[in-house]
Length: 367
Image (cartoon, rainbow, N blue to C red):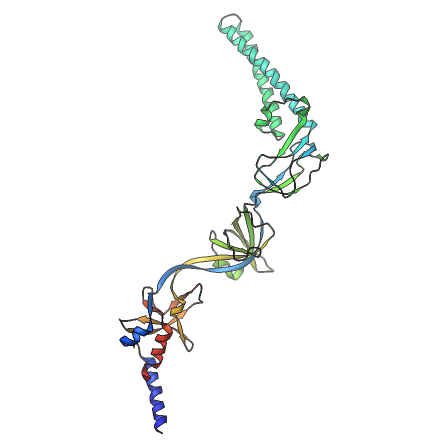
């Protein structure tokens, strides 16, 4: 009977201890507890949504190279999957149309040179009073006509795809008058080519398809329920199976205004920095989209302990006194826990030695 009463007394003492609002340690207990304290901190965080995506080339960095005038391919200077530089010659073509346009231009240029010299000569003679005004007007009219013709012939070559430098470059060999080069419009990679030596390419017919792969797009499919959790312009983390442990960076640039009725997802476009050219179009990736940033209270995961179905923190109330405070917390992440309610930012709490402090709290009444 005495043992039963003693056990009951012990249980009552424990219950009274657990219901106490504060825990007080003796100097000896405090010395052996090896406690560390910190404050509840306020941090700016955002929820994240992880979705799958597929990489593709940036549409603004895709190029189709085609002749502006018809021509026969006489030489190829690029190959599929090879890298090319802006302005590099990809192929040489021979075009009768261009040859005729160049011949007309050279003829107009020669006539202009003659007429210009004559106009300058007559101007000088008229200044000296040697020739009449009618002679000067005739020379000026011839000069203007020749200049208009030359401009028309130069414009015809420009429309044929020649740059101003190519137009003005002298042609040493008359046999080269009909030849011209297809050049790369940008630095990039040759995705595919359809030109062959001896092939007749019509004006506008694609010969090469190039891409600048230093920037890629990822098409991601965001569930409708999570659309409000993502923010345009926010930073994005991209992971690819070929590079385990490596995180690539990008930004969420756009989100479609239309929902796919079958998958109930919204398509988003992520722009990825790929200057190292490690990623390739067509690759499946995992994309972590960040949501709106908000201010929340955070504590180290080590500071939180459970009793039954509840979570607690030890609030520091004095030099050797501590108060167990019931809190509502979120899921741990990277060693930290979000506190939904129970304590305010700036509150001093115990962050290490919590297990021993909990032991004292549980058994204080029986000691």
